Image (cartoon, rainbow, N blue to C red):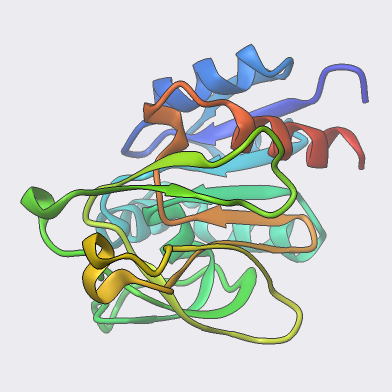
Length: 204
């Protein structure tokens, strides 16, 4: 696929930043707000934002079931922060009425890193991403509590004193054509996660 067309779910969150990052990595990118738009793209990015709000908006915009269907059929997806939460099979500390897309066989803990004022930054070694450690920014981020064997762990928070209770926690995963990070690579200018995802979409 010479120029994959990747949609960015545009209900809330860092939509513009993801569009820019994807285009810098050689993809054609466009916002997705309607089921018809979802049907025109080769892959989808679910950005950071507020997962319970995004869950409600997916239902309000009639996107929830179409998106689940596309994921079941193998559409590549990348979720950052809230996107990771939505893609997971189960979330801890979420609202009882929160919808899950169920594309990743794992359990995540919502807002595990704390409130907005408790943002956290760390350099991570990410499996499958060359070029040295990746500087990761976590903002009210989740972490992964546990994964099933089908889920490949790509990164954990290093065991350092600064990491506190986040030390050793899983923060990047991949299962087949679905990728997710607890951090926000769209905010740092490091395009390696987006390059990885564009390559995944282009390989289909």
